[in-house]
Image (cartoon, rainbow over all chains, first blue to last red; front, top):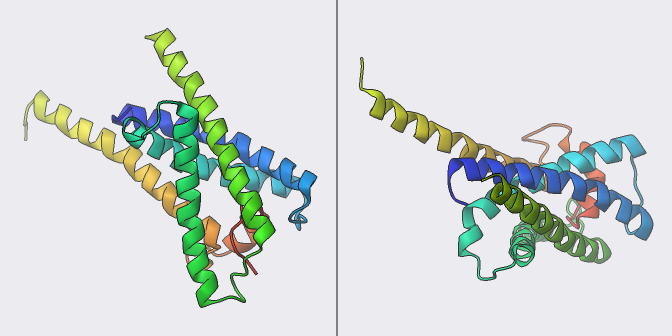
Length: 141
Length: 61
């Protein structure tokens, strides 16, 4: 996958995976109780679906770009590697902001651990959606 | 001016590749704005995605 059509397709697959992940992440957090929600259920569902969708588009787009260059063969491992890298880059930037302004950006270890596990889950979902998408293309073509 | 079909095809191909690439770059920027709650870029984004940011492990107040 490297062309513009593939980029669109990757972003589309990422969007589907990201929306599903966002909704699942809100459900998992409700079960673990790591962060007590401050917003209503509808607001939470919409923002998590939107936030997950944005994350998914970025992950899917990058997956389409670097899919062939990643070291592993499994789409699951590739997607987990990619989503984890994106999250680590974001988290490193957030860490720098936290160091500069600890009151504004206050890090909570339990949320960080949950976030890391959730991003691994995002990779697994993207890998599953990617496999289904590739199989669909193979069947159609 | 008529540059011919080959040139038109090349421009279409370039734009066709540029638009999805810009979309992904734009989304990457949106992700940064959401994850860091950058109010100066998008007023209201901090409160809107406050819970999402906490749940995915990004530092917040």
